[in-house]
Length: 276
Image 1 (cartoon, one colour):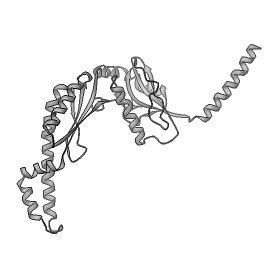
Image 2 (image 1 turned 45 degrees about the vertical axis):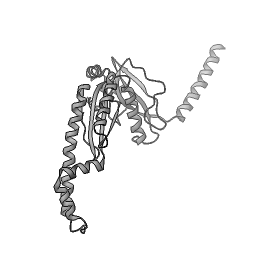
Image 3 (image 1 turned 90 degrees about the vertical axis):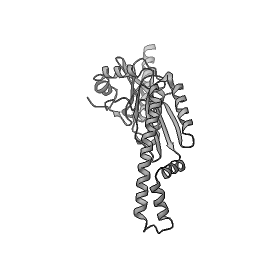
């Protein structure tokens, strides 16, 4: 009787599980975030992409592991919330352990494919890169010109601009088109030259605190500085002070921001999922 009762209970339980499976969205793939050491523990409340956000787990192979989550067919992948979730997970990870970030949108059929196509063939390369990143993270330094201040500098340093502006003042726009184009070209060239000089000044000031420095392309016409720095996390305080000192030197001229610690996108290259 006991054995039979157990069998009936098991059958009822299995039927209930099948109903739960039908109610739950089915997994259509595995989403890949990044590569970390295999001894990392993922927080139980870690969530990634998807709506609702999917739990993040670690798929281990040898001495490395892949941060992954199940991807269901519910809702499109690629929303701004998904991108933000991807970045937040990797940045939070980089603040604690070395991580090799995978570019946003990497979806693989399942865990077996990740092991066979990524973790196994690139195991030693991943392990070596992770060791180099131990205790390090990326920081981004951004500076943006105050528009009035930088234009005043350009006018003071370029008498030709002031002359052209006086020349076209109170004239019809169709008559002054060529002069306006010329003014724009002179101003843009002057700001580009200032950006290059200020970027070099920031580079020289911050490079001694960094393992590596990468100059990023400007994202705005008034960008003064845009640098990515690979820094020992224990030197974050020194970096903050150095950026603060630059901000003081450029007060009223350039607004400075320091972002980080971040995942080291600018300093690692990981193969795309599925490449072999």
